[in-house]
Length: 116
Length: 113
View 1 (cartoon, each protein chain N blue to C red):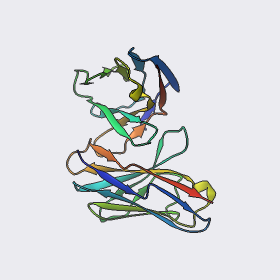
View 2: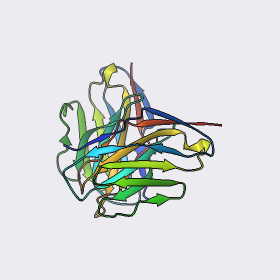
View 3: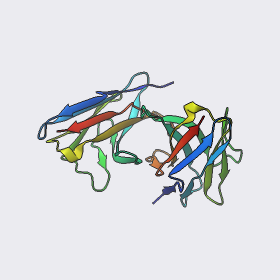
View 4: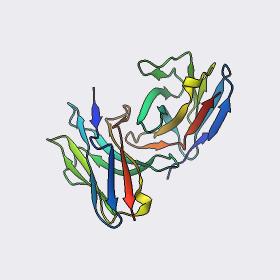
């Protein structure tokens, strides 16, 4: 099956620093990648949709200047949390859509971000 | 906007028995997909089963099956012969075409040995 690699698995950073999370589709091309945020014991909340070569579309209430998304190639999307604060601590998950197979989404293993 | 509702925050079942997780959704569309995802303690999202709305036949994957009632907008998951490894959060989800996946609130399933 298709594999989505997400890195790092966990990261601890100081308040005010920026953190980059990578999401790679290893054996397929992903025209669209989705970034989710998940708080403990809650569901996944979509943050943004990124399409290769174009600007990401952010969900209402998500600060696009704080959560920078880049989708420069068909196999890589990155989420950068800028000037991180403790309230940004969360579990972030990416998923990728297989080209021409709209209903198939594959998930990365997630990144636990802890901001001190 | 489409919404997905899971009314059971927690469920428990004895090992080897059968359990059914409930899910309802709201949409005005006729062509869409429904999913059940499992999220174990590792937090990796795992696709359990998928149903195309245009198919009347309920999807089945080994011990997992669904009861898809399109008119009632209901999509329940039945797990037969429950195993300890089935313990996880289960999320029901809706998707139409290339649009985003909309998740329910989740149901935490506990398997009692």
